[in-house]
Length: 593
Image (cartoon, rainbow, N blue to C red; front, top):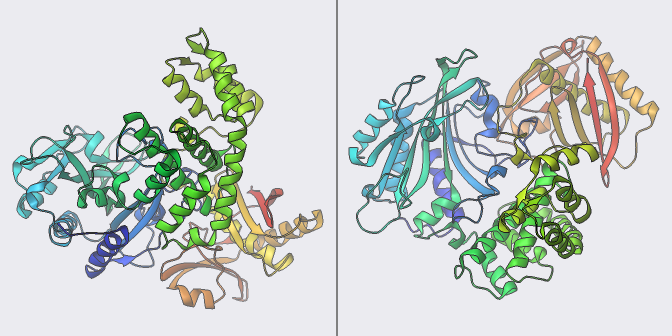
């Protein structure tokens, strides 16, 4: 097999291969999804492309490729139990937006695997959708694999739970997928990859979005068909380098070495300790990347996930003998591993400070919290919701840590009781793992579309009325409201808020045209188009311009949309809140009616 020495080599090989096949590279997006309230973090490479998978024209064309950093909160509990589950990972992917279909996709996949990665064909097997009452068996993919040389005895047909993607809600695009597995066992490859641990998935070589599930439950053929693929960088490195787990590859070994030196323990010698090694390594790597994208530990939404990761890592570090503060040391190692991520280098000081502060907070109460937990369960078989909430409120224990402690001590936890207590005391968002924030399609409802365009007007109003130096620092839009973050050093006065509202409503009432253009990024920036601070954009971008009655530019921004075609569609604009969220950063919340 190809002697891939590091992640950079694998990533470059993949991207250059698809570039030679006419694909354009799209940037690695932030872990914080732009204008999508349905998920906390970017969970897959396809997520930033959702508007284009739904039919919007991508400025770079119909064939795309990239590597995307991802966070999957649903896998937090699985991390450590085996050598492959991760919270943070990088995903290689390529897409066809209503261009090539199954034959071309699988031919390219086979070529990359067998020629570029030099994997022997006898080490590969594939799975395809077996069909059911909703959609037929995917014989088309199976025939293509057979024509490429995959024998029948290495081909397996599985159901929806294994080889069918979507829809992510009750309705929407969906379709069969076909996955490629690599044999990691000894001797001649044997067994079914869906049942044998000797097979490891190396690539989802094609999610074929060919159906639309209707409200009535029917699967209708789509006119706009897409191909979406995904190859995990860490998993592929482990396979190519003959490692038993991703934690033995170079993207983890420097971190594992640090943990060994700090704990005095050896990775792989003891099952429970190995689990703790993996949790510390994965969770702190994820925490570094999340913090670099502007998130700070808190008790709500993304900040809660970050806090949970850091505190779970600290608790497992204590289990393997690390008693001193250590998170900053691990963070520095992560930053050294991923030197190609400029965000990590630029935000190194903030990353170290936030980890250190959170570690200090938790260490101050960790021991007392564990002692309190031991008292609570003494001679009991159940931990009440009130006691679990006390551990959260007084000792900073995320409920998931309490659940973990209860499981380790074979004590039943009244989770429903905790939730009741939680709601009584604070109006906080439930955690992603409890099921509120599930992966879904970006909201393109009429209200959200109106708020998108209103956000552009707000950005320009701030620049016109407050300061030309104001830049967008982030935004979040859902059907209920818009949220806009910007750089400014003080609270806005009531008079300034009124002027901003009047300026925006004046532009709405004038019924101004909103037009979309595609142009090179450099040209867009030279034309005066506003961009989000520190955001990464492709070489060709979509630019939305709001034109005045005399065709003068009222607002011009780089954006993926969606937007109204005329400002009269927005409705009446009203600011509901203006507040500070960090040093030099303000936040506005607003609605339209």
